[in-house]
Length: 428
Image (cartoon, rainbow, N blue to C red; front, side, top):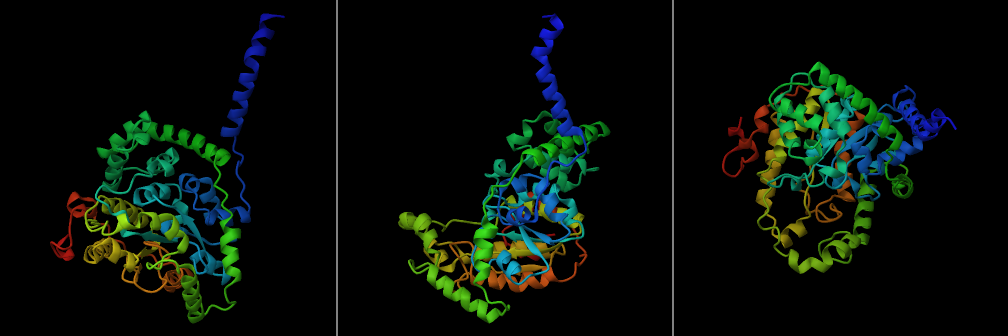
């Protein structure tokens, strides 16, 4: 056997594999195809893979047959029952279908990065953003960052950046605290430049475009959402039991009946399964456990501001939802109502003073029977109450709002501002 043949036997398969990889990653043919059923399931899968990736979101928000609306939030969206937004939209053939983006841990920083991969879905479009005051802990809620992070998000963000805004500088500084980002040399260098007010150079943009080509092909080829079958097993199942005509009074009665049926085992009127698995064993320890909780001072207000600037930049017409807490649970754990409502007032001031006036404020309704499915998540009658805000907004025409972004909301001063100490109107 000649040396050439020996070398080919050794290196030929490797070269062939590299050539095949090159064809897959660099030739302009699509690698992804999602059926209508795939997209329906993806819309209620609550998959971290969808938040991380680009391909499924691109497919859903480019779909010509179904008007998918992004619903940004965390665990607030995942409590299914007969009156969940996805069930009502399906049953009553609404002009839109919610596309749920997030699960526990996907708060403002995660959603800011998520949005970088979907500018076409936000540009002069509608969206829903659910805010839970529980996000606003002193150090912010970034513990689940690694679950939802993808380098493709950072590449998209940097590619669309020219001169960094104050928000870009703040987020670059925040992302450099995350080892997954900081330990990548290219990102480390570029983000330090952004932090200093310098956008990516022409050479940087070329490197980013190359990275985008590889990462987006990789996303299309390898990423898939966790098949939950929620559309078939939850949405369609619950939709069958609803009356054919939408009548608020009749649906409210269903909320009462289902809430009563599902919460009979405990005094907090939370779902029996949640009580058994999450509360019962630790109930004595949870007595007065939240007396010292305070949501008024948090870096999360600055992360929320980054989300708001992104909505403003894309002229997104947004409905914000502020969630309540189960009042029976509040009384048991000692959470301060005064503190909670002051945190809500601070969130609303940050929204409204910049022109974000579509707000479904449910924060004072946590004491209503069967409004809450558990300790902090709405369900049954809570979903129906929310529908009185969402359906008119999402069924109506897009409005181009006059947002006025105030960069002071990124500041340490605002993060540490306590409404009880001063009137909100004194902050500017």
